[in-house]
Length: 613
Image 1 (tube, helix red, strand yellow):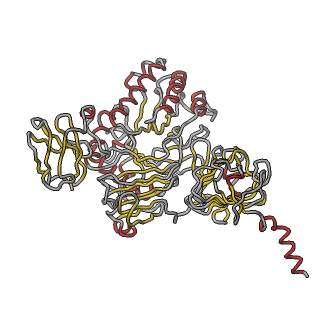
Image 2: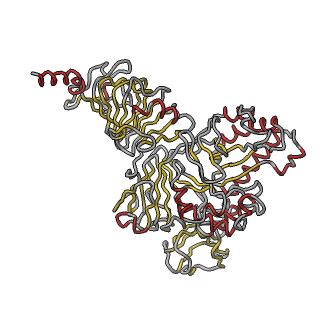
Image 3: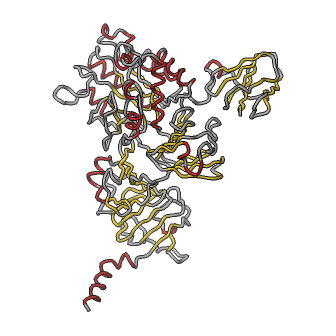
């Protein structure tokens, strides 16, 4: 009798779950409304639940499953699951909050909760896949860690940050909660175009290179798919150097049906890492209380916080010399980028004074080592005239050697305006010079920009700096090509965020109150770099792609040209835009000595591409 009583007690405690209804999402109502009973079917029947049984105002007390590759289901209001469990697989669900019960987030399942209190009444979340997440749009990582982490499990094990759970930034207000799973495989590569042929899946946080690429994929990859929430870097050399490209799947899966011709059947290095969603506004220095989501130090010793990603910097030559430096950057939690040298254009100060780093040949050779990290790379951040001198020389030499630059780093203090003689300069005029400078830099490089140091100049008053900041910050937030910026506080009595007593200044308040937009707002990004196919700026407006024929294409030895105007000079550019051949009045050209790759041939104002095999 004792055993019977125990068994009855168990039924009384758990009977509601054991015998509850099971509803399967069918989508028959042909809308995305979670609370429309017409979208659900009772398990094992063709009928749906009764009207009012799935309602935002009452406990559902049923087990629900969504698993049919549903793109977006909206649950407007709070979901009260009661004694039930919601299982999401290969689907996306948005709601305000979960009010009770439990949710299982399976493979390629993504749950977004928008309320400031997203998990109430001890609702439990179980994340069972590394390719899945819970997004809390209005709860920051530190708040989530304190208030909600106890309600999270990873494959039925209590969440323990950062051992088995990641709490990544979701821009300035939210958190991406997902499993810390080194065995997750977010990339699938294929040896044919259009995701066809033999395939292999790759794990995160390790270098896959050379013969270590699984399924004999070394120099065989032609297409791939990257799951959302991850970044992948692909390179032709097994140490990450040579022609390479960065791909980011921020909020959608990224499908590359055909790699660029320079990378096809030529990939020997792949690194995949979790993406971290940051906003533009950051700080130079580890400074809190300003509503930022990233910071950097003038060095590589920092670490990421719950609310702020740390971007490491290879300050000088000795910070990018050997494998130990590379391994250090690879191991930085949350880091997706590495910043190169600090003012290496200055031969008498900063990093340029050490190890002959102000010599652009030395700087380029040292910078190349950073490619081995598999991270996105920011150029040296130099003094404000450097983009049109030292940095341009650095850029050209790097490009000629297939050394990738993803972002241009700059400093700006309006030094060209004699700031020591104009402490009360017109902030509008300072801002106008700032705008013009940014546009000139972007026009020259056509790459994203990080402004890692800037202000109206420490020789100018607090009032001038504050007024300049009020003009500059909204403008930076509006520019597509500005990815990140960090105001420089000179630790003096002007332009600082905090005074000597630790109180926030007027300048600091303006900075803290500036709402910041996503650094990279694209859902997916095939990140452009200096290695992208381009022509010299002077030629771009003249180019056409009609009236000129070349064959065979691809070509091995002799390229034949068919054009009405053969009296013009023939120019051949490589994929970097450099002129490699110039021929007069010929209808056939011996290209056997050209390296393999993509080229562009121009006759007069007509242009066509060809491949040298």
